Length: 430
Image (cartoon, rainbow, N blue to C red; front, side, top):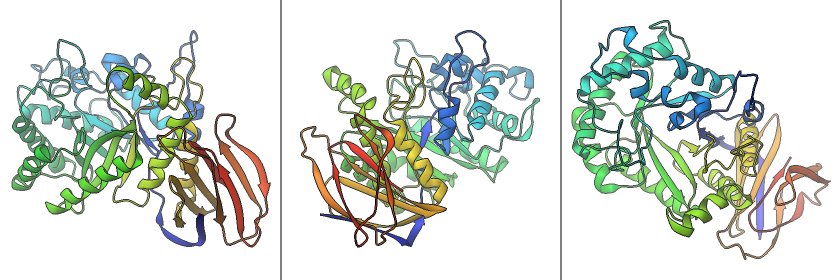
């Protein structure tokens, strides 16, 4: 069993696979002041999607991001700056950018799990809703209404409109209409921006085909197509990656970016399966899943991954909910940030089952190897890593005892070294 890494042969660029949902926690209060701005910044996270930000008081809570927060009364004059409340949305975007991360702005509403719904009903006037979105973008990027020039590039229309009762209370056809009206209006006003969506819950062919047909018939812009996938096996994620790309290409959207902007380890959504899922997400196995998915998608037909979620919540495997200290899942995200800085992806072959490998070169050489399996009883694996060079290599391990710490420096023999890994661990070579 072998992993072969050719640092002398590049195969494109490292993709932004360590993007996330939501930004760091940073408060200016003297009391109860804690956060994770420093560690978040250190991870070199390329984009933060703003979906579900209004669940977090540290981001501004119910007063941030959602259209119902920015434009509280839909009966108000959409052309009057006094009708808008941008305060906490501005603060939140600025906090994200303080970390060196770009904002990926979701236009729409957070998910609503409760028995009474507020923001997920179809807007009373689709065209007016589009104009409200226009003014929000103008405020963020063009200085409208004492605004800013943030340079936000991605604007996503809605979230999971196929999840009836939690994210959308209209018909699919009503959403198709809302998307087309909004996308055409925003693209005509901001032709240089990337307008897309709709952050579908997964590969929903019966929902997607009429949506794509409507978008094509209306000649509505779709610069990127966003969708979600939660799973316990890497192969399930890759299956969705390929199916979504194939359907986009079938409808002539071959130039449209495919962005998986919600994903994480999920065994099931209820009962003991859900408890197992959230316990896994915050531990070593969840971290190995994160590393394996990012690594696999580097060579798949997908443009970006956005982990759900960096917000203080039960599905955050990066930072402790209470202290914001780093958890095991933080370290693959940070390691990928280092790969991003090196920029150039290198040729890698791997015939070791359940072992995933990626490498990059630039101002240095780095590889990340992950042994992930949903079977916790999978045996220890020993295999050869062929680096083609006898230069010293420092090994960093992420496992139950190590948080991506340097454990040894070795000199390969004939360019090769022997590596042993337990299941659900990660090794970085530099």
